[in-house]
Length: 117
Image (cartoon, rainbow, N blue to C red; front, side, top):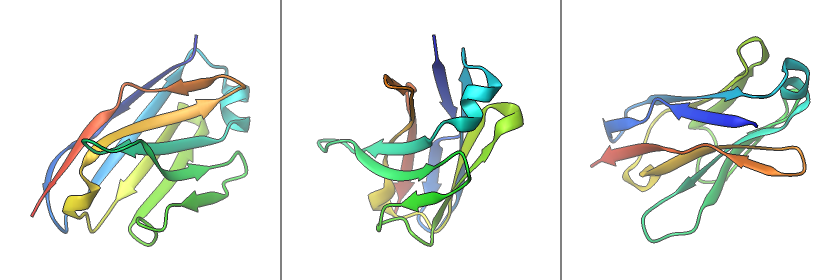
């Protein structure tokens, strides 16, 4: 059973930075390496939305709202995907979720990010 565990969330002032991590377990290193990994977020009262993805080849894609501020990366040796978040804004406040899929979707439990103005 694939499990994703996020960490690194917290409270930060506007303009600050956070680095989120997501460790995958129950998945072989080979499968992890060929998997597309993603970050999504859900703010209170809103639907979950796409933030960023990274493919097995390292190609990345970002939501327009985070381009130039957030960077997604992966460490296949550690079965880990990261989200470096800089220049944080109050509107980035949300629960951030890690995602992958092998035909079935897998989600982490989420990590809270709160940005104060």
